[in-house]
Image (cartoon, one colour):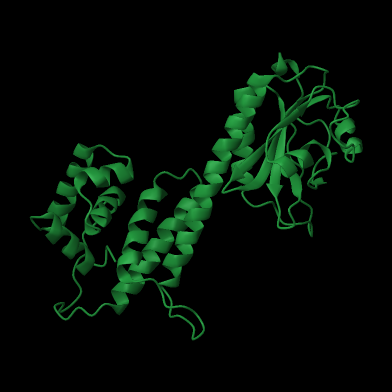
Length: 308
């Protein structure tokens, strides 16, 4: 059984002062390794991100006994990981030492760890390889189709998360560009309706993201945009400050989608909620805003600076 390799879980070494910055999305790779180990039953798993130069840097490990591979840079075509980078598909070797299908540029690091059988899978999205995940054992014990398939599943899940993060960051940049005046050589900020659409989508995405830091960044960006929009908005009907109703996050999410013209069913689908749940949030928001219809609720929320 692959799980018979009883190697200890070795904590990653502390990064010394002056060392290179951490690999982007390291937290997502660590979660993927835990997922891979659970799915494959293999105790020794590791991986890393592909950098700007197209080389792979091994940075995240579970089950290693040495630091021999920490920070190792793998280039396309070299070693097992390099073959994965070059061909963009999984590869394995049943016995690393005599293997002729791969180059042996990294033998020193790999053999110090005692690895014999190993499989590697690309983390691919958008036609590019963003990283590689490995599963390995210290015996000549071929890792079969089941292990390879499970590692590929973990890689695909990671690729999906990285794609979501990239899209969220792109939309955040668009939203943040609307909160500051454009420089003379910059393009104009997005149109109002496009910004409202971004705002609604980001609110919905925020509830689905496991990454706390990214979720908080989403919320802060949305709040900052609303404050800026409220400052710039001409509201002659307001004689003085009024008490702003306190709406729950999900009530705001529902209103943001209603403001885009979504039906209850469309809002439910976008937010992964039940249709009756959407109705309940909408009724609650309408009551708190002191109005009687969905359209009046949207207008009141904008008047109070709760929606763009």
